[in-house]
Amino acid sequence: MVSPAQLLEFFEGIGVSFYTGVPDSLLQAFCIEVFNRYGESNNHHIVAVNEGNAVALGAGYHLATGKIPLVYLQNSGLGNAVNPATSLADPAVYGIPILYIVGWRGEPGIHDEPQHVKQGEITCDLLEVLGIPFVIIDKQTTTEAVTKEFSKTLQPHLAHGQSVAIVVRKGAFEKPEGSFPEQAGALDREFVIKKLADGTSAEDFVVSTTGKISRELFEHRKTSGSSFGSHDFLTVGSMGHASAIALSISVQHPKKTIWCFDGDGAMLMHMGAMATIGGMAPNNLLHVVLNNGSHESVGGMPTIARNVDLLGIATACGYKDTYRIRNQSELDNFLKKGKQDLSGPIFIEIIVSSGSRPELIRPDSTPEENKLSFMSALQEG
Image (cartoon, rainbow, N blue to C red; front, side, top):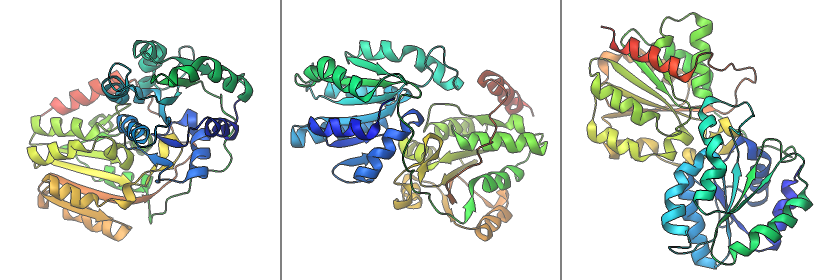
């Protein structure tokens, strides 16, 4: 296995001293080492809101210093990175060299969640199409082997303005030392999801974002015997797009109440959707952001959401009303209002603590089954 600490020392030795990206569970040990060394937001490390933004941050660093930036990301994030990788960093344009560290989720032959299967199949092909030379590391790879291979195979490309990548298989990094700081909150996210879900009726439909939020919603519906499980669209993958999905449904079904259960990292990733929601102004849409200040589903690296005035942004985008909920009393007061007293679009930020139960179950239906069940329930009545 590869030592993240020793790998970072090697990168520092060749002049790589700026890191940015969106965290991934396969890269957790590497991300913790970066965080522990450089902190959260400074001239050495910036947690980006999406992977394309990370490429741009890396490009800016190179323009400012002439040095090589490192961008870490899950392979699903290559989709967000393709545009700046091809139209900005590519040798055919500005020739900005970037070192990518890519977590290989959905690798063929390795069991993973359904949203990772397709990207896992095409990861290496995509890098080849992008003209990004790469090496693959796994649990048999030593730190000495990867640094030697990097120096021989990849480093010469960087000197000519070409980006390169290290593709990381599951288990390639040694276990992490330490962890990310926990984010405090008076409310537990799972408790909040239960309260919100229990308040829904036959005319309510929920679009929940990828990760722990969808899993907690699914488990509660299942264990509580709720008859409204078919009213939940459990978005897998496509991080940051749940609010746009919810918006489109709300426009087509104006007599139904559409909820979006969003995460702070997901909301930040494609925050432009909030401007579209405000512009369309559907009065039946409630956008809930469960803000735990972290990318919890992929290890817990902090986001910047706790330092951003999300309500102010929502108001500026055109949301009709906004709420910030910090404790159970405020949550109960909001739920007592009743939907008849609410006119959307409404933005609700709920401050919750980070952390989840390790035994949290996963949906037992396929994404297609969830889609068909949701569509059927939506069309009834």
